[in-house]
Image (cartoon, rainbow over all chains, first blue to last red; front, side, top):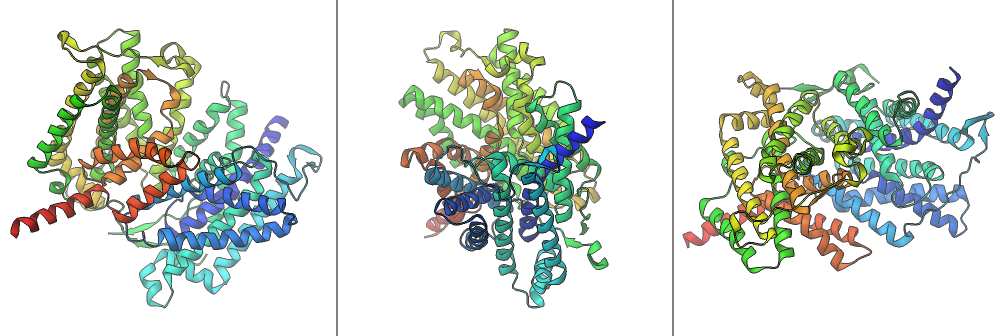
Length: 292
Length: 340
């Protein structure tokens, strides 16, 4: 029983990474209705920016705030420059655009900061949390930050005019335009926010997986899986999905014999597919009713 | 969340454009020119370029298969690399362990993959859009790991993979191995292309397209949606499997890491660049995914990824509908010239 509890705890600790990323994934999905394949790379780039700022002597929280602001602006700029012209193009063309963006960011980051692995500081320290070896203060801090972001997002969408406008623009663009919402800018805002959330995720994840241009590849796959599992229409679902995927993965590795590190990912993904077949809108998502 | 939000009503948007079936192929004249070029060019170039042209045809087949699935039936797949891998391994194992003739292994690879794709299509039936993308993506990420498994190592060669011998030209024909393989691939490709065009013109093809354009309307018209959706998966997987088998023979080697998600993404890019739903575009898309990374590498070694991304952006900005758009514009220009 103790083994089980420990594995669940360790699963929650890794799950926090996925939850962070899944939150950014859901954010962009709410705004543009696609999964952005370049999301992880955008987060990685932001994390490198914060690292560079710290190298130049900016204190951690200063770099943190500057990076979030930079990422927000960068997200909007990317949308205005690259994806607004593609708004009328077929969806699959947009997906190709995400892949192109992925290749560009990855390669540019590799050129500026090269591919060696770098240490990244944590503001929470890395001593054991509440005397448990399985979860460090950094991981506890990361869970706290994720939940805080979730709370802020909830208040933003529920109680502010802009949040309401964004929801309207995402669910019924035509009607939203008729009541005077600038839907095009709402999409840009969605990109900015997703990019900012992604940058926070990146800065939280970097101390665990270390900083390098390819650090987000695996995380993004799990982040997608978590977001889809929880339901792409629900930020709360995405965070829960993240923790569930983390726990799944750990339990599978512990209890199913012959499952090494290599099979963890396929089995976790297979479980997710099973969940989706039973509940196609994800665990916490709303089923979308289609008008014929 | 408020009660009004619980039931979100969305008018159904189309994921894949409706391409009329006549717009899916080339005219006779153009087809003959392309065919003549494909037959004659290898006579004048070096062996390495012949090898590249063979790969062009093979990836072209794989893109064509994805095109039937996405452009034809409107389903999305990021898992084509898995079917490609199964085809490649089927051919390789039959040739190396059972000593079978390479040409005979291809139909078997096709049939095995058809079965695999048809079965995979069953659970995928309940999923659409991003969910289907994730499911197929999972298949693609799982495949290399499954091929490395210890249980199958006797057959698959584990991480090492298998070495495949390249066939000689039969009947003592005075052709180099590369050239023989090229013409062999060309014949297979043309046969599959013609079969695919006919498939899309047939009753089944119309059923695919009806599902793509409006699933509910299609089922109201009496189309067995479940059957045709899984059938589309099966056909697509089968063709990809044949391409995989040919690929294994051409590169003389199969290994798990040759069939990662990157291959699936490349095939997807090939389809978008060639034009979704336009079958001849498959070869253009295939050329893009084979040659553009090399060109990018040539322009800048350190920034090859960025150059590739920029080139891809250029293509989708200038022609968001891919090579099909170019072909349509060219056709209109030609018609105008004729009038004058």
